[in-house]
Image 1 (cartoon, rainbow, N blue to C red):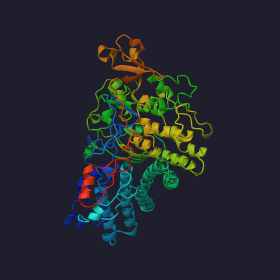
Image 2: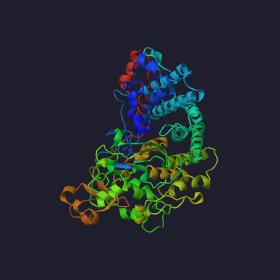
Image 3: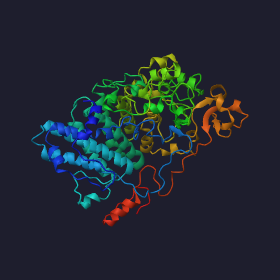
Image 4: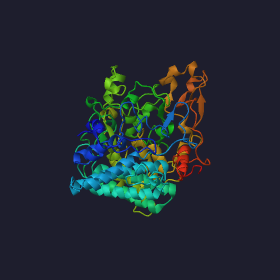
Length: 603
């Protein structure tokens, strides 16, 4: 059954409605609770309701929360026209976690164990317990990433069980130890095949490679606890290895087609994807936000553009290639890693008002050709919320990058050294993916393989980061540009400083533009003291109405303002989210204590 069909069945699932108010506990109705646990198919329907929330993909309709391109714009890959997004700098009046999903999953675990012994075979029982525990672990991992310490509850809680409803926060390590056990159970018991578009053991392992890598690197860099880092990094390697050794997946698709296909079924690059189909009323709007007709205030920073390797495998400052320091868009397409050409439109584009480089990663090449070259009308299914392109949920390329990063991190804390074979079966396998014919016709080439014995010497490398890990992080940045990982990556590496505009001035400028040659119409009175460019030495030239010939460089709008300070401020912790004053007071009224999040002003 396709996920689209399952989404339509959610309303039939005999589950419990979610609620954002932290104390709301929707009561079980006699009818639902008595009939939901009488067959495996009903149990499947109950579990189906979690798919849209855990596997957001491109969202649904116009909803883009948690979706790529527009759902995550607060990081160092994006420059936003005007004020840059800010981090929370004060405790909110009202805000706290929702435990409705946790409660629902705890009920699922309880009912499987207590009521379905005569309904399910032992294999089926363990499979569905694995599914429930996998989802519960995903939700707790999300809560921990957001808040740090959170209450850990693994049983059904009654509406009057105040000791549990107002339970104090458990240490992050306590919660994550329980999550670790749920992951272990799921990796052992979830079926290797439960049907098309259902979670299986390989999907479970792929997500564990992601989430265990997050926890392992958080422990290493934020808590500086290498023993706990080792525990989770080893699990990330184990989980990724399980997927890699299955021989079910491969790197066989050109980069842009991964994000623009209407049918990802059978694509070996996909460990899991979300299917969209207008025929059953399941569509999205992500492609419309990058269809080369819609305007946007968000675009790539100069910092991101400078991070792309040349196709000789070297950063621009270390490459001997002709044109290495030429950031003209046409030259970059020919000389940079092939993912650059697949991510950006080939000409400076005024529709991208933040950067003038337009992100077209999520629009098919044939639609771009139809509209921008042939002058045809935009197909209706790439307008509004009518998009039907399938969404990658977790790709094999990510599993490979999770593996090599976890291996490299382990090597710094006593684990075995990374080998050239490790590099060849991960990073170099990704770099060797097929190129689209359109890319080849533009002069795009595959990037040279990484050589462990001759890593790039990048003058811009953060001195805190070893060269191998620096290049692995760069590979992630190129592979996942404008997806959903960058901010979480910076947090788990404890590198939010990269987003500080005072430390990194390349965050307020965008693409390289030769205004006299490429956009002469912008050299007009309306842009006096607004339009500016930044040269390779960091010199800023503001358009004054008479210096048009000098307007060649990284575009910067003078209305772009930096983020407010967020680092090294007392009682501000940008890495974790505070809870609200009202919720702390509500605990107190009941006679309980809710501690504020680490790094924020305590009660």
